[in-house]
Length: 222
Image 1 (cartoon, one colour):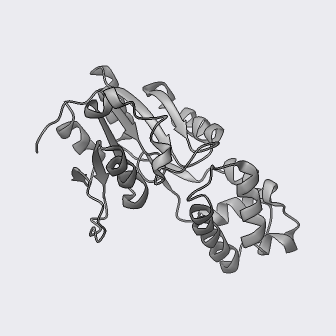
Image 2: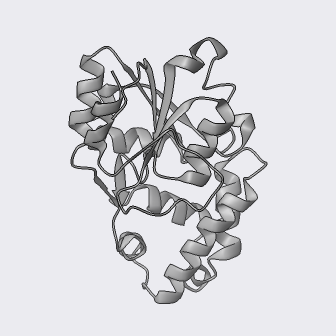
């Protein structure tokens, strides 16, 4: 595999560094002490879609997220749960498992003088907490959250993250074509598509590299 020299590495978190547990909605319901149902799960994933749609052109705010939750997750009404209560419960539920190779890869890159940065479409404090819980916070130089800013797929998200002088020396690693690879394509930087399920790319978005294991990152970046 071709190697590239890069100093600035931008990591997606959800879906790349860690994965969501299969029964995420059930775990959140248990934490909030409310009944779990298939309807609640359907509404949860519909809410995620609305989150991406509503913030496609707007800056992400917690207030906006709470409003989307209350508008889309009607099952919460009967349980007496507000959008704020659900968001707080969600952020305080153990919903993720770390990729088994993530710590080793991050540590190896940092030891080699690379700068690991997190670029995430979720809330700042939640991601900081999760990085610390998994024992990998110290491997990250900077954390770029969408909170108060734009989602990665919006070209307006680029300026605060990628400096023109660092473009050739930057690479992004992520699992989402529509979010991570879109960011890299828009920013004009190289990218690594983490595709452990070997999903076929049917989009016009073009990653520079494609991998099925995070260990392969070490075969690419030198």
